[in-house]
Image (cartoon, rainbow, N blue to C red; front, top):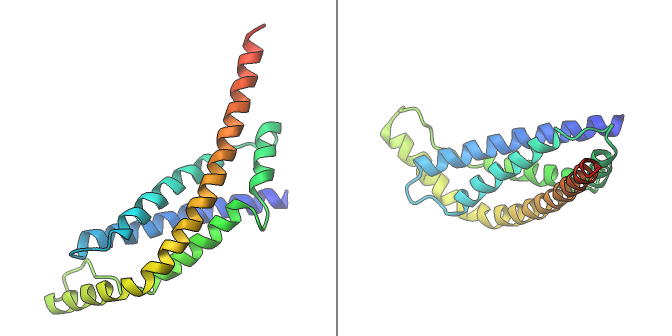
Length: 163
């Protein structure tokens, strides 16, 4: 039971982190002239990650097929926790960026913030790419587990309907 609660908490945390990171990327894409292309990839990957993690919420621990899938995904060294850890690190990376203000407080201040953001990104881009690679690996593992579970369910439905 404690494992199920921990998994649910990790799923919720990753969905919230994905929302926050996507929001920051979107803000930067919209406000920084000549924004780094990495931001589009991070925006897209966090969006697809959110969808996959939201689908995990619908797995039922009491269903044998779902339970087996969840067993493979959970644990301190499982892909869900690995993804959460990488997303936490990516979130901290974005939190340390001087983000441009969307409010119009002053053209000079806005330009300075935008310039600082543009200058700070190259220092963080390499780490962001490595974290994104890690997230993509975990996401792929989770997706394969979900696909396998769906195939098993489909096979069960087909065999039940053949009678």
